[in-house]
Image 1: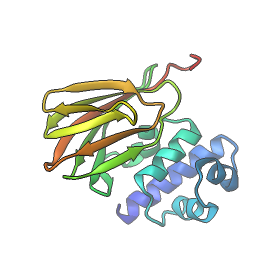
Image 2: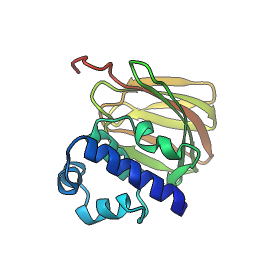
Image 3: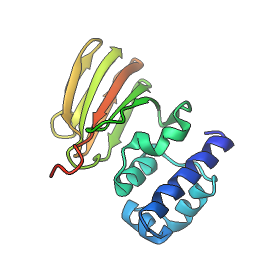
Length: 177
């Protein structure tokens, strides 16, 4: 991520944290990251992983796309996975759509999203095994899978690159999970 994007993400993260009245220590502890790492991230330094950004979004109770919206045109990536926010809905329920590309022989464990979230994957090219950790499904180009994303899940590729669309539908506001 370039310096401007890191700075923009850091400022947005700090704004969301302060709007909730949380200290650095409170958010860092809730997200399971070091306070010093969160401080560096808010200052526009460091190199946050996708998992760190996801954990922060979950703890702030905002969709991942809301946290990264100010840098939507910057692909985020690590360990063979690239993710780019394509669009965010502004209605209830909140919907985020991402383009995702995974390298061959990639296994990515994704942490649970916010309670009630549903995830749909549509494979554009390649083959992928995905879904809740205890119930993955093999998918190929043209296949779509929808599953409860408020539990840990994974994406596993074989010997080819995989491109997919990821749609996350968050629980309606005020709806018990």
